[in-house]
Image (cartoon, rainbow over all chains, first blue to last red; front, side, top):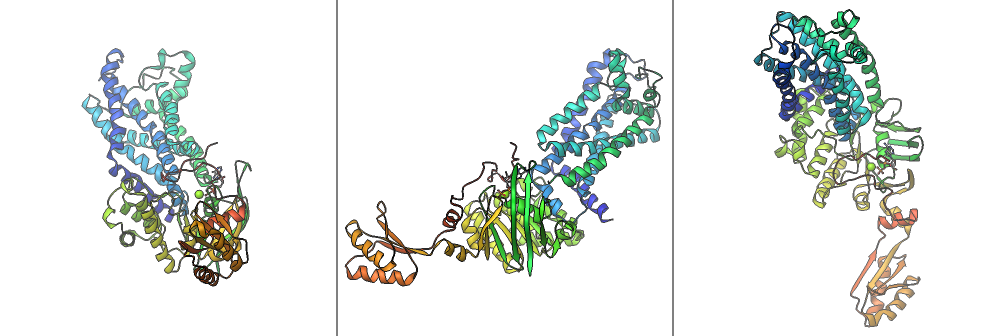
Length: 263
Length: 331
Ligand SMILES: Nc1ncnc2c1ncn2[C@@H]1O[C@H](COP(=O)(O)OP(=O)(O)O)[C@@H](O)[C@H]1O
Ligand SMILES: [Mg+2]
């Protein structure tokens, strides 16, 4: 019980950081909003979708997934920063549950996504995004996205503890996340890719997440190029399994690494 | 009763390539202050981190407040306060935020946390800057806030790792009086320092460490005695040097040495003030008026030199103390 309370206090701390440095929040929403505008107006015209409502319907789920994927970088660099300042030493010398710090951080960073996703949603609406599946399905879609961010946040803990230098962590996280979001169906159909990449793209968790969200937002999943394959037929189930696997591996591994990070 | 006991602690880094602690043993009597004195890289931080449950030793035993550090770290955490070498507070949050958060993490409850935070801010003269983010604080203010954070629930044993490193003289003075206040309150304190005068000023006992080992321990006075007694020092006009040397040698019973540049004659004496008076009388009757005269007790620098055969020099240029930030040793 006290472990839960400790976790909540750390979560509060994560959220309070945002009110003290609103710039972080502003910048973490500006970038995805820029992506929305760029893709919508720069590429949008040249990608034919045959989808009612146009490219922006397909684009928004891609942007949402990409945005929550960057939770990994945020958690990792934030933790690395705390480690560098010796703040972690203080937390560790307190009589609190030793996992509260990482539990609270992953939770806090994931809750930040609520704000970011809300801003994105509004931006999307302004440029013509109109999900057609009803409020419930849209809500489930967003919960799905938040869960994905939460799972990746645990990978972020591991990365943050491994590299220790906040800038290295940033770079490593981007090097990992960027290709993953582009080697997917997020922004363009995978049909144009070389065959090997198509296989990669269809199993890529970003693709299954994007396809799953499209389904929940009421779109036909026409970007799943390799039709008939398991991930493209069952994107929601596959994504869910991915998240479970990520959490099953990274929660215990990251907690353990955190507990041992002093030696 | 001993509040802190460390026995035969060994800690190596990088698979044994760096031996940070090499069979280190020390103890602190309840309600007293032990200063662990040593140059950069001597193993002070490693020792503190082990005692504060942040690090596991390769071998050895440690007890804090009667509790085994290795077996029951969670219990030890309930009775200790730690203020590390680098102020460990959240830079982005305000001083008030920090203390309230730590109070809540000590399970004081929101109301009590706020009350305690305000009390501590007041006591460490931080009330005015309580609502400013820590990153706007001076080095001294940060250290004081960090110390305040380690005092939220009155700890039985307090560890302070180089509490004044990187502070300007005024900040150091302020920190010293804060620490002296605490000690009057009866806390058991283990304090590390590179400053000999700091150990002299604050500690009941001093453990000198070098290369991860305690090389001497005792009161400041005892350590000084270990190096030898006092020295009589007299500065005179050039024409009086020869005669003065004669007098000093006779009274001290030792060979007098001369620093020609300073025109200072000195010799070890065992009778202290008596020898000083005798010398002045003899000189006076010989018509010699010294320009300066004194009894010099050996400094702790002398102690270090005589104990280790080398001055208290830094072992490695691995740490930058002034920035208050941790620079990771990557080699
Ligand atoms: N994490 C670490 N990895 C490798 N070597 C370390 C580490 N921490 C400390 N050391 C080494 O251990 C020795 C003792 O360090 P430390 O306890 O920090 O000394 P002090 O606090 O007295 O300056 C030094 O040689 C230092 O370089
Ligand atoms: Mg140190």
